[in-house]
Image (cartoon, rainbow, N blue to C red; front, side):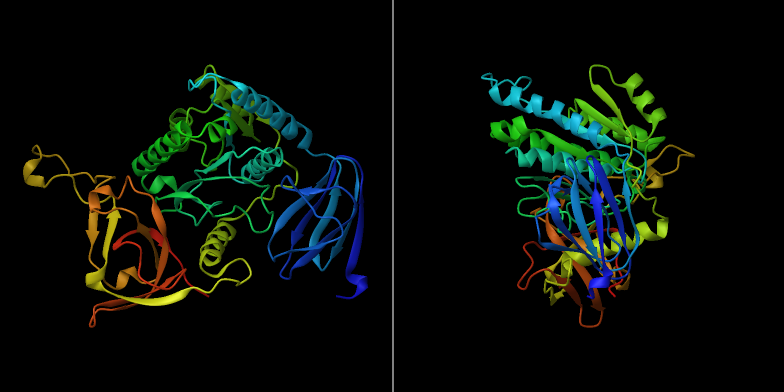
Amino acid sequence: MAASAIRRFDLSKESELRVEVDQTPVRVRLVSGNAEVFGTELPPENWVSFPPGFKFAIFTWNGARIELDGHSELAYVADETPMMSYVNAHGILEGRRARASQSQSNDAVHSKGPRVMVIGPTDSGKSSLAKMLLSWSAKRGWKPTFVDLDVGQGAITIPGCISATPIEMPIDPIEGIPLEMPIVYFYGHASPSANAELYRVLVKELAQTLEKQFLGNSESRAAGMVINTMGWVEGLGYELLLHSIDTFNVDVVLVLGQEKLWSMLKNSLKGKDIVKLHKSGGVVSRSVKIRQRTRSNRIREYFYGLVNDLSPHSNIANFSDISVYRIGGGPQAPRSALPIGAEPTADPIRIVQVTIKDDLLHMVLAVSYAKESDQIISSNVAGFIYITDIDTNRKTITYLGPCPGNLPSRILIVGSLAWMEG
C-alpha cells in the first residue's frame, strides 16, 4: 500500500485506539511502547493484519505509537475506558488462584481456583472481557479453562455448541481460541429458547465432565474457569443463567453494562461475589442480520479457516453407513395412553432417528462419539460435517468434512443449524 494510506496514532497512558475494519483488511504496527488487543500484547515493529468486518481496540497501559495501514471507516482514540476495573478484577482472581495453588489441602473448597462467569445483555463486551481475563491469566503461567455457553456465537467452535477448552497461552486476537483439546457438546440451535431443557442438560453434562478432569489435575483446578454466557438475560434466559451459575459452582459473577441485572443477581445469589463493571464505549451493537452473518462466518471458518488456509474434503457416504438423530420432538406418549382431554407434549430430550431425505440438505451435523443412540446426550462430539448433496435414488449423501477418510462415528446429530456455502 502507498505510504499515504498509513496513519499514525500516539496513545497516551491508559488509552485505546478503537478500530472497525471495512471491506478490506487493515494492518497495524506497534512502533514504540507497549500495547495489547483483548489482553494479548502486540509484537513490536511487526505488521499484524486484521480481516474485513473485524472490530477491536488496541489498549496501552503506559503509552504507545501505533501505525494503521489501510482504509478503516472508524478509527479513533478513546481516553475513557473501563480497563482499570477489568484489570482490578483480574488481580482479585489471581490472588484466589495463588491461594488455591498454595493450599496443601486436597479438599475441593480450598484447592479450587476462581470460577468466574461473565454476564450481560447482548453486545455488552462479554466475549472480549473473557478473552482478556484468560490472556492475562495465561501470561502469568496459569492454564485456566474457558467455558463457552453462548450457543448463538460460538467462541470456541461453531455456534450451536456448549464447549470448554484449557487456555495455555494468551489468545491470538485474530486466530481466536486454539482448538487442541476442546470438549464440545452439540446443542444444535442458535438460541437456548429452541430447547431450554436440552440446554440445561448439556450444561450439566459439561460441568460434570470438567469436575472429573479437575479431580485429577490440581493445576487446572487452581487456575479455575472463565465462563462466557449468552446475552439473553430476562425471563427464561435469566433462569438459565442462574442454573448455569449453580451447575458450575460459580463464585464470582462479573455483570457488564446493566444495573438491573446486577441488582437482581445480588438479591438472588447469596455468598457469591457479584461485581458490576461498565461496558466499554467501543462495544458496537449488532443487528440480527449481522449476528446471523457472524454465525455463518464461524461455520465457514471451521471448514475453510480464517483466511482460506484449510482444505476441507468432499466425501460420499451411503445412507446405510450413517444414522442421523434429532434431540427433542415427538410426543412422550400416544393420545390413547393419556387421560381424556389431555394433549401430548413434546419430550425435549427424546432422541429421535431421522429419515435421511432432502430436508437435510445444507444442514450442519455433529459427529458424535456415542456408540449407541441412548448415549448421544451424554457424549461429546468429534467435529462437524456439512451436507452438500442428497441422492435419494442412489441412497448416498455428499458432505464436506474437515479432513479426508471415514467418519469417526456413524452416529450424527442434526438440529436447526443450516449454512449456505458461498
